Length: 197
Image: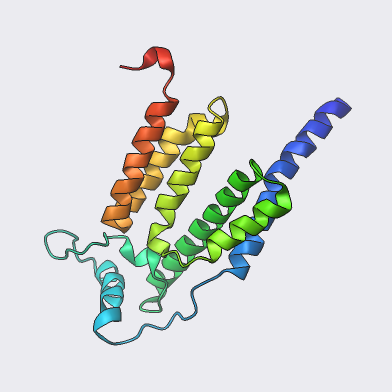
């Protein structure tokens, strides 16, 4: 291996690693889930209902309708059942990390690294519902892909954003519809000029 190639690979690794480390630190410092205990009452009962509907296999649509879809329980890590709690915690951790990572990456393209981390921290510290994270991830990913249309990030955008938007639709209907719209518009913007309709 040529020494220049080694430096290029090392530089590419640093470009990916430092935003990931910053995102992890921001995730830990801004974690907003304070309790995993399911509580009784009229307002929180629908959240427990989402967990129970999933556990009991209640069909969404004919037997159960809500603004949150069949995967809506993922946005609310509560100890209703162990399986739904584990799935919800995994979803929130991964989604929050991806959101932090994309914020740091996008901020670092406009500002120096320390300022990018501080700005990302300020944004993530705002009260954002976990159900809205996929919408924000699709939006930030679209900005990244449109900013760098010749990269692998942009080439993977239609497939990755389509999957994320589809999951967002199953999580919460209105934010999922917005994520689908963003994915379609950004994919249209990334489509090669000569192949447009």
